Image (cartoon, rainbow, N blue to C red; front, side, top):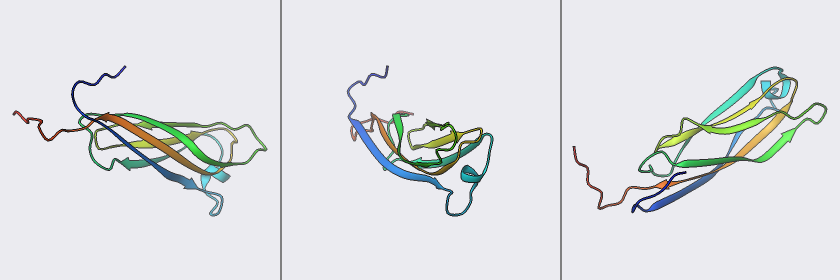
Length: 116
């Protein structure tokens, strides 16, 4: 559990298309086996420390002739941003994925001291 002291809490959110492979025959649509796409996301302003990030699929366009296998997660979370990661495997065919994300955590306050 993350607890907050007296600092203000900031919430940032966004949405991004991670890939659209149907139109150009990309490997998420035509490939097999383990596949991964990553997108670096920057927050609108830095948090005081690494925030909590929740990520979800907001649009998926998939082939239904095989099982749907997918993982979506936030990795490498820093106060400045994170990597949105989508993975699939086996014979799953994914045409397009859009993700939504929300980050919340402590933000700097103008009265913070920077003691060296």
